[in-house]
Image (cartoon, rainbow, N blue to C red):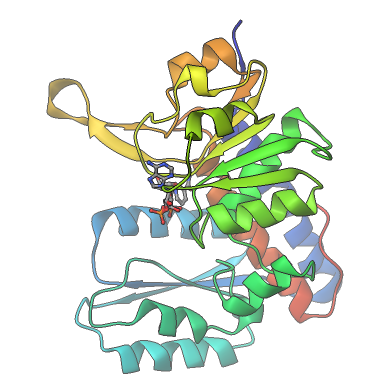
Length: 294
Ligand code: NAD
């Protein structure tokens, strides 16, 4: 058996096209141009690449991108002042502070200082609480993108057994909440879970968000299951180069699963698309408009 490969790159491209159309309609009908402020402190090369790709996606969708690049020795007080300014700026609908922040800055304090209505990363406790209680919320981008991919295979997830490996605030927990809202029966597995392989084998939908290269083997997967691999791990490749692998052994998964996401080209591109989706959603909510349909 060979699994269907879920093409996250193509699905993200299509989503970005739909977001651009919805943003153009918002501008035409309400005079609103969604704006995203991205704050980068320091010059971590991986963060710089990520920030650039976000800014590019924002402008390609017809939105405004405001980039704030601050030196690595920026004080916490100065960063908080910038967030305060962005919170008050009417042309900014979304604020994204790139993590990790330098050690002199308390990340939780900074993230909690973002106006929850502009928190396009969905990390603010107000948004986490809104998600958990079924209210309109800004939801972390990677879990949103992961569920969109699963729904490409199963338009209704209702009643399915879903297992999420990983319980981080950024991926595992919000993903479990989204799946619960889709009427899945959800199990959250983590580093202390007993018999992880057996737990995974029960899943109709298996989401791996661990950060351990190719941990999920073929015999952990129920035949025909849909496997969404969130992991991004750098491992040594040929000629001294590094290559990216997920948390799932892709080759083995292809033999057993019904559908599987590749790494790269699966969840990664969806995360960027969902950043601009959340910017659009934040812009609509700020104007008292209903959720955009994309
Ligand atoms: P994290 O380190 O915060 O959390 C990892 C989770 O995995 C923890 O909850 C831990 O309990 C669990 N875990 C660790 N070892 C385990 C084990 N042996 N068995 C079972 N569970 C175990 O990581 P995170 O931020 O949630 O990210 C997870 C992965 O997803 C990483 O590879 C990260 O790079 C990737 N990621 C990808 C995207 C994307 O856009 N595709 C976005 C965010 C994170």
